[in-house]
Amino acid sequence: MDKISKLLRQQAIAQITHRLAQELTTPVAPEVTLFVEQMLGPVRPLGVLFYGSGLRSGIDEDTLLDFYIIVRRQADWPRSVLACMANAVLPPNVEYYELQVAGRVMRAKVAILTLAQLRALTGFASLNTTVWARFSQPVRLVWHNDVQAEQAITHCIVRANVTAARWAALLGPRKASPVAFWNALYARTYKAELRVENGQRSSGLVEANLERYEHLLLPCWQAAGIQFDVQADQVTPDFPDRQRHEAQRQWGLRARLGRPLNILRLIKAVYTFKGSASYAAWKVRRHSGIEITLSPFAHKHPLLAAPPVLWKLWRQGAFRQS
Image 1: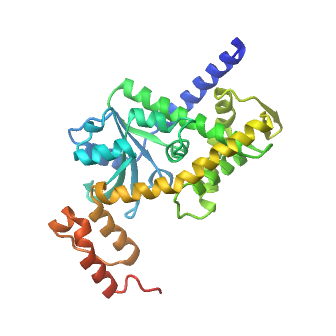
Image 2: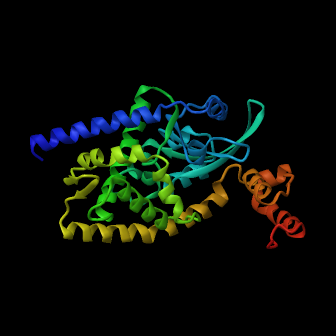
Image 3: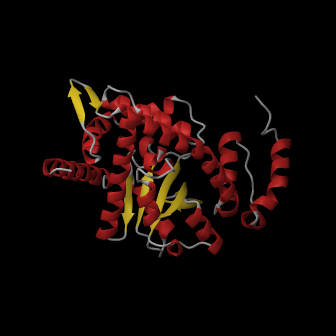
């Protein structure tokens, strides 16, 4: 890499970092901050990232908040040894929380990663597309332990956006608007995961933040060392055909692994999903209107308690088509 290319790349990284650092520190609803502080209690992870529909659409009584808790070591978040081992082998673990905040019940689904896992899963070499795709979308750092932790997590978010933009260039159209490259990328990542949303969802992510995506693509390409041509509102990444073909082959591997990995995580969640009984009861009430009263035994042994609950739901018509 010559000196001019290196300087342009450094300037692009600085530009992306500045923009994303501002995005990460944009204030959120005070209830979200209160929820996080109550959830953490005396525990001090490196940081807490807030993302998803609660960030995009706001909070109502049925909103399920989405957080990632970033820790330095697996043991830094209180849970069983089995859960720590499972999170080390097949991250992330997921937990569910229901808390009284400002006179109302708020709920959250929480995933846990170490900083090293976050760094690896936001890199271009990662076979798991879920984390870098998620954090190439708007996200907030709603809690951090210190300046060093904030900088380390911000670096990973920058890394996620550069990785996403690089894949968008390799897999996307030969020539199109920046928005078209992002839309094509998210359509690919949705197909690579076990997702139930329809095809409009991936394009909706970009449409809700057009200015952001339009201004991030080219600096991210520069940071990734990708040359490109700009004509009016159309951009053309410069790749030889062999590099595109190799990228298609590499993506094929990721697409084949995506669903099996997500299914394995779902199976793992049966044994490690803290708060799973409360989460299931909330989902049932939300979708069917049927209230389920959970005993202490059901909270502790959700699998053993499931059959009588399923029988009750069947008798009340929860499984019948309307």
